[in-house]
Image (cartoon, rainbow, N blue to C red; front, side, top):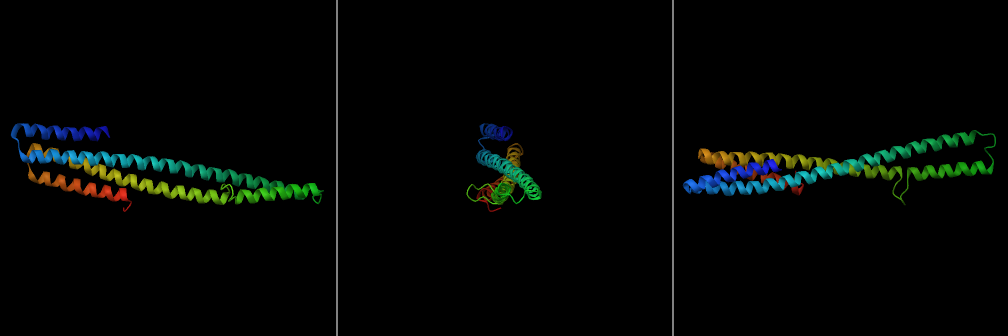
Length: 193
């Protein structure tokens, strides 16, 4: 962000120098334009960093959910093996062995679906899918803000060049690119693109 702000400062300094020399109204207009573009740039970069943070948080949560799911799946397989071993014992009909088999089956059921604690395999898959969707959305927003940031930087650069060259078309182009970037950033913020 500091590099972008430095570009904006250079543009403002150029506009200020041009204003001191000629009191040119076009240079004043460009100085205001650069200041507005710099403010929009700062906001777009804040949005980009917020989206990046949201992506990382959701991605980590999704990874944790899938790892926890795998651990429960492994535990489920171990219980299944234990049940098979208990059922194959010579005294499998004994009430103590049958109680252990029943307890293992109950634990398997809790591993598969535990709506009370919300940490069964079924719930973990649903939570992981939610985090995955949120991470994808945040990544899309980050890319959108990144595009708006790049366009705003280009607009500031063109506006700065327009002061030195005194080409009206460059000022208008910088304003058009800047307004388009601001509109796109707003659409990203609103979640419309």
